[in-house]
Structure formats: structure tokens, C-alpha cells
Amino acid sequence: MRLWRLPTGLALLGLAAVTAVQPAQAGEGEITFCNEFAHKVYVAIAYLQTDVNNYLTRGWLDIDTGKCYVFDTALRVSSFYYHAESDSYKDGKNKVKMNWGKGTQFAVRDANFQAYNAEKKWSGMYFAQFTQGPVSTGAPLTAIVTFKEDASVETVVPAPSKGGSGGEPVKPPATDGNGPN
Image (tube, rainbow, N blue to C red):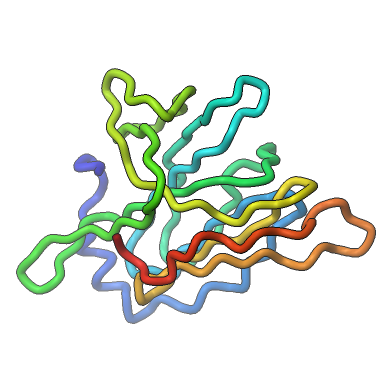
């Protein structure tokens, strides 16, 4: 995806020193992404703009191994889709890159972007596969998506806090537990 990024050889040297990710906590209505994979992960997100009834895609959130970040603290949606890619890395003699996402295509580009009406491919963009996250039946969704060491994905919807309006009942996410696509 980004050839201009730093080489990942240094990440391989530090792999043994990586500690477990601290348990992520998400504020109500926040979508948090965590990286337990051995290499940096880049995340793009898509969500419905209800006022114009089309999808917006945004990317890329850079997540180092062992870190968690809220995608956008001002974003409050009842559902979302995500696509993620790792840095390229050596696997034996081969250079590989992990990709997460399947089911729905939305437009993305290699550089940071925000694309309106992302169901269409615009100049300089290409389609990528996105996985649907959980869906809230009420208030804005609170979710934590973790890219695991074994290349699987774990999605957690925390229980609502007492007296809060977030964490309403949700529909389980589309299964993406098999990791790379």
C-alpha cells in the first residue's frame, strides 16, 4: 500500500520484545481499533451518511503493534465497515502483506483520504473489501476491533455503562474470525 513507509526489518528485530496489548477501553459511541499483529496495521472505515444516503470512506489510521486508537473521537455511528492492511514484511523468502476485509467494496486510495459516495470508484481510487462491524439498534455504537497475532479479528461490544445512552443492543458483526482474506 505505502512504499514510502519505513522498512519493516526493524519491527522483526523488536518482535520478541513486544508485550501484550493493554485491554482496550472505549468511550460510549467510540470505535476503537487495536493491533496485536506483529506489524503496523493501517485501517480505513466506511459508514453511512444518513442525510445523503451514501457511504463515506476515510483512511488511514496507523496502529503500531501493541497500540489501540479511537478512529475519530467525534464519530458517532450505529454501524460501520472496516478494511485493514499491514506493512509488507518478509515471510521466509517472500514479501507479504496481510489484508482484512470482505463482503462489501468501497473506494479507497493509498494516501490519506476521505471519499464521499464511496460506493463508486473515483479518479485515483480503487475498490477494497470491507467487513461489516456490529450494528446498533439504537444509540451510537461502541466497539473495539482487534487485529490479533494469528491474523484473526476480534470484535467486542462493551456492556453499556450505568446511566449511559451508548451500548444499545447490537446485531453481531459479520464473521471475520478467519483472519486474512
